[in-house]
Amino acid sequence: MLESKNGMKDGLLNSIKAGPPALLELSSKITALVVDDNTLNQTIHHRLLDNLGIQNQVVGNGKEAVDVHCSGKNFDLILMDMDMPVMNGIEATRKLRSMGIRSLIAGVSARSAEKEKQEFIEAGLDDYQEKPLTTIKLASILHKVKKDG
Amino acid sequence: MERNQMHRQVSVMRQSLFDQGYLDEQFIQLEELQDDANPNFVEEVVTLYYRDSSRLILSIDQALERNPLDFNKLDTYMHQFKGSSTSIGAKKVKAECTQFREYCKAGNGEGCMRTFQQVKKEYTILKRKLEAYFQQARQVGPSETACRPRN
Image (cartoon, each protein chain N blue to C red):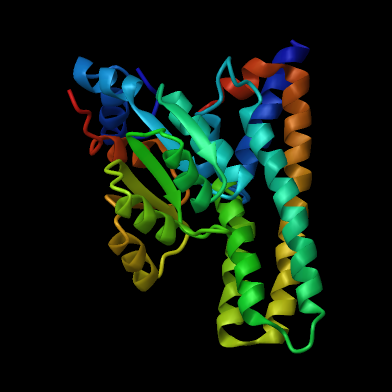
């Protein structure tokens, strides 16, 4: 049983780690791409995903995210930062959607202004979470990930 | 007996960081990602934070010497610093970063300079306390940092 602060967190965390077989099986088969220019955030997000048994790759900006898809790779989940050099999260999300990428794209940003958040969402996000990302926030994103077959 | 005392000391040091408002819940989130396979995860992340912070502090110091001040650039740097500070749970540093950004939005150069001194002060204090904590924790052994008591 995972230690946590309250019953609600227990239920959510345990549903990922030790809950219904379908959900456990889901998290261990999900692949993810972390898109963030900050090494600290890359490290934390990579570890968060690892901790849930999710195979993941890390890239440093939106252009690298697009390039990795152009190379033929695909991911169930993309954690997309907003502010990045070369190509930011908004541009990258638009580009990926125009390429026909149907992955679940979750915007992860420290920006809290409603207007900036709205622009990011309208670029094609399926979810938006404010940084810092936590296991609870990630679990809520994962509930939205659908696996084909 | 001495080892138990050291364990208690580390525990007390850790708790004081929360009680005195230097760290918040986010630090606990990082601790929860530490395990036998990643026994030094928190310290590794905090070391990355120091590296990021040094670079940003230097950039902000240089930007504050310019005349006129570029408040957009200052805000951008501080947004990054605040983000990193938030990611490791650096509560007091984060609060000072927020204040700095308020002064940036208001175009208040004096306020920015004054607050930046506070940002650096809080950062220096936190760095010193965390370095002392991790040094003690290392002496006690990896099990102490991996199996931390709940806040």
